[in-house]
Length: 111
Length: 113
Image 1 (cartoon, rainbow over the protein chains, first blue to last red):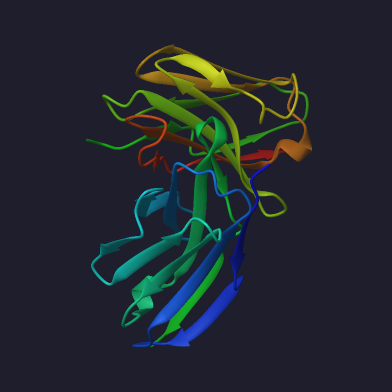
Image 2: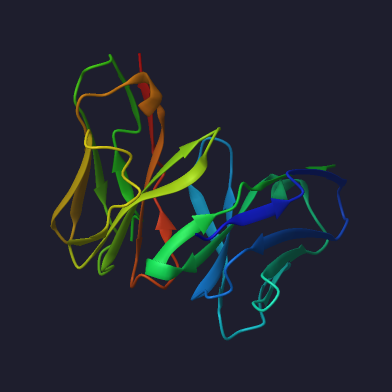
């Protein structure tokens, strides 16, 4: 059974810092990995999707990498802003085309 | 496109009552997913459909839960009878195929008293 872990569970940084969120998964037989953002009381917004054959994806200030063999992904946020404050969720699409989510990293960027 | 639409946005009911949650996926998407989010268990997949057919319902907690997708533009998740432990936020998501980006609705916040 796929298990997804996100570290740290919470993170507080000053505005302007570059930061890295970590995601690890136990079964490397995956189709893809997605990073989502969730604002309080809201649904999930997809940020990046990395196919199993890819090493990284970039969107604006966000860069996600994937090392399938080691079961790890990172989400890099450059020049963080207060508007980046949210919970970031990693989800792995593996056997049965089912997404398994990590517990999330709650990010606060202080002005 | 309006995105994934869910209704109601909030539901408060008493234990034992039937609850029906509704979802309209993004037009043209062939896959639809129902998730439940709680503080204790995080986000869990309950069931998903591909081309209106239920593919995997192994996440449905028990027989009190049922889901249908009568056509490509509508799905329901029903809980009968509801219990306080069913209180959670229920999300519906859709995607072009099962391996592509999933787009989530705003969720239904359910409280069972």
